[in-house]
Image (cartoon, rainbow, N blue to C red; front, side, top):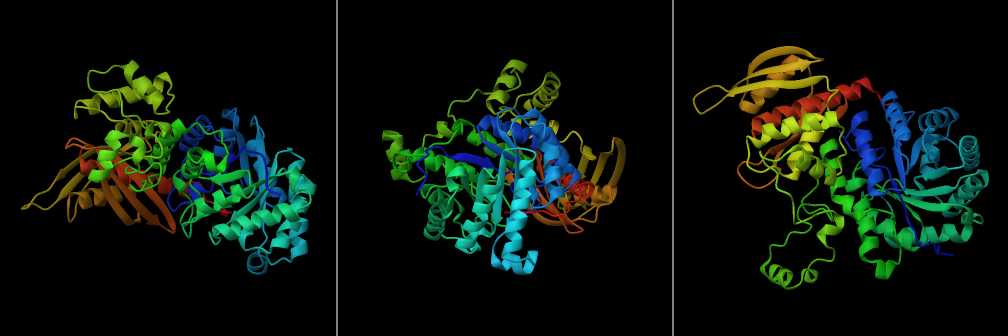
Length: 515
């Protein structure tokens, strides 16, 4: 029987599964800032991390659990006592803690990864849920690779987990293998063949390997699932996870057809998307649904004509619904602290007096260089001025000479753990020279995998935004930097990437897990 409850729980795993995007590691300050924004967005459950994976993960989850008051805070744990103990240590101070434990259920995982039979898996799932239940009555159990599991065995595992105390059971499409009609039928089969399913919420967690994550999630919800596990911008390992904004706005826009609701404050979607992009360094593709730069842009003449007559001719959503407003307060060099504070608050940044002082100083410096300050400029200031204050490397000075008749050279001064260091070097171009000088100062052996440049806004005085991807000793990190001078932006991005590599080195991950 399909679920007649009309409320869909939004479980956000940007901080856990989303962070498993290649190079998308976040430090504790960045995770905490993002968690605060997720709570403001109205997310019901925030999966803050995998505490047993690293000391850095544990610390971040602990701080998030202590700070947030409304959202449920979940810690991921394998079906082992040690993982569950570690997860509880991290989330025990949360106002609403949840332990999320899992074990694989597909035959291919049982044979090649777990080397267990089905009976052993059932016993392990029951033992894990019971142990988690000894700490809290809010326990979620996930059947990893559920979409490739035997349907009847899946029902048996879920029934045992619910009997053991699980209040949520999750069906993951771990490798993005499912297609919508099959996945919907699977959900219906679970409802019809799990005797105690009425005592738990059925959740789904989909990956986008075939581009079907949102479609699979919506189909599962129509079939009765009442928790959707998602990430902002759809980030996640491989092709990513189900996109939060796509699911939420589909339910919101097509309420007439789906008849379902969420608790998401949709006007904070755009700010949340930008924050995730700024923190992770992962750019949002222009044609991305809901939050892409082109999502509300109209170039075709017939579209523009229709829009002028009635926006609903070519827009099924109002941009204001996700927090995009056509009316913005223009900030410039004559703007004061009050105007700056108000705009930052509208963008989702609640700053302390000390933080505002720092951003205001950066604001005035940039305002002397360009006429108008746009939202993207402010986001860069917050990201670089506040979220990266604990970085090992800091760019203090850069001077570059280049041209058609001179050999490109860069002079660089860095602060390394607060101590100044200087170097100069040559390269094939000014950016290559700057990177070579920085590499010598930091002693890095990293390989530059990707280098991209874009403009934050229109106009010749726009800040250039540079994204780099670095690899060193098997670790991959993204770096992002912005400045009106594209060479300086490149150097900032490179230094940011090196700092992220240092963070990964200092916080080794024991075993990243994806559902």
